[in-house]
Length: 203
Image 1 (cartoon, helix red, strand yellow):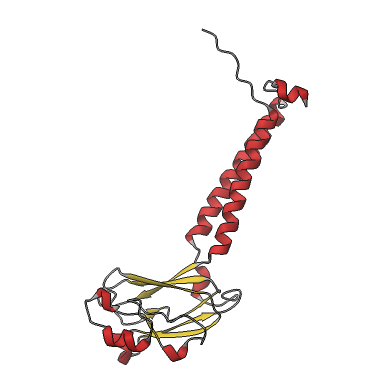
Image 2: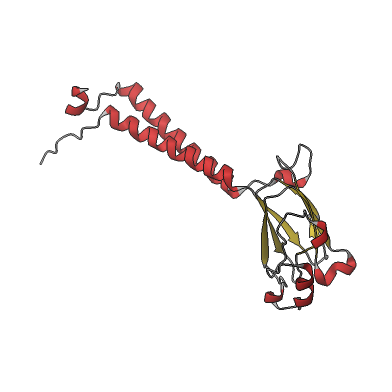
């Protein structure tokens, strides 16, 4: 049995193209407001790598234990901006509480074993100094510098960090662009004459 040819209106094609581009733009806007995630590794060499990192307000730093020795991430209470929220693995609200509770091998005490992570978001500009409780004596120390605009040009290794969300945005934007170009090609090749429905005729 012969089927009726499918009627595709030019208006419907243009609405689809506009919608696809709109979704990509909205996703990009949402990501721009979400901040960047940057990683600091904790190693069996008893160091934070890098031991100093520069981020923008709203960025999140993720500390990851890439070795087998347990570590902590514990802020020096006196060495963070006065209005900033205190941070320490284990969720403690003060340096004294974090120091008192720490126990090697106990994740609830703030110990971060192999492959464990801890993260903190930095909305307030300033310098944040922190340390590893069990390895403070061998100077396992670190610092986060939060500045408007994030790291400057030539600011070091953290410039090379590309957030996963940015990669997703690039893929979505490329897909949207390909869709629009494909529709433009169809219009140019066939003149947009796919059969016009009665609604379009009325317009």
